[in-house]
Length: 237
Image (cartoon, rainbow, N blue to C red; front, side, top):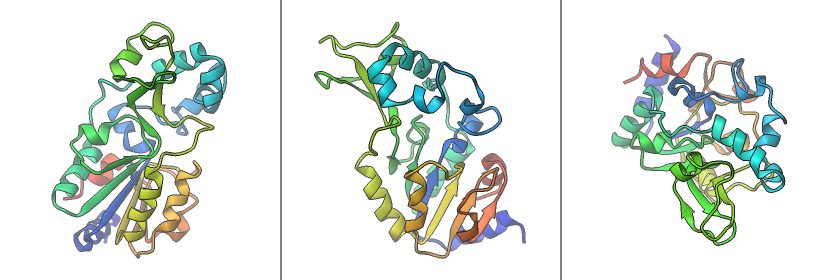
């Protein structure tokens, strides 16, 4: 039996599926990931990407931070791909109970999914660090230099930068995974902490990992598929 057939059987039998995804979910939409051959980690910047996207650099050199942020994380015109769309249909059928994503691109919401936990935040929410006024993402990406509030404060995207704590929804993600009868992990190397620890909270016998490369958690998975998400999800119904 093909691995996709096994996956389909698992989905058919499951009643409470949770999906946990990373950057690989959005690469088919044209968004670069971090650790692949063409990812951000393979490119040269003034500082390593983890520094360019750190709260320290935001506070210390906001001009340098925003130069990197605007050039590399602007996905306002990007559209959902087959994976986002399949998950929406799975939610509509009542099988998928939640999507937990490390991505900040908002594509699951754009695809129409309702229960989405963005544990690393989203580009679509931005607040002034001084008066906390909310700003749309368009204001950030279309501004010149460092975007500032009418009060004079710097506007910060509500994305979790290196050096910042995860939002409260991370605790909700733990509980959702604990209760799930199936956990699909896709498009993530499972190397980023503490997000990768979520896998350990799953107690069932339907842990599926779909990723082009191997992950540290493959050995505990019930099914591992090393292929592009597009190739896997186009075969499912």
